[in-house]
Amino acid sequence: MDKREEDDSEEAWLQLRPVEPLPSQCCGSGCSPCVFDLYHRDLARWEAARASKNRSLLSGEESQLPREAEP
Image (cartoon, rainbow, N blue to C red; front, top):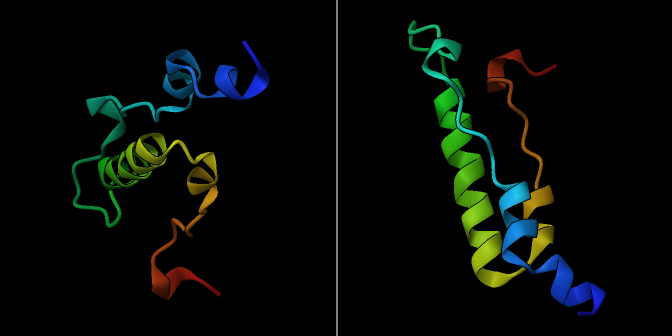
């Protein structure tokens, strides 16, 4: 198996899958974004990257701060 095939293996992709937050990690006060919002955003990005077998889609870092909190 060459390096490319190894990188596209199911196990390799599963290791990159975002971890769902525990219910206790949400404070329940309606934060925006909530830890679950961030998880669902990252999961959608991972699913798109996996479907296209393009890991570069995973590196699209977006600020997690609300716009008004950014300097």
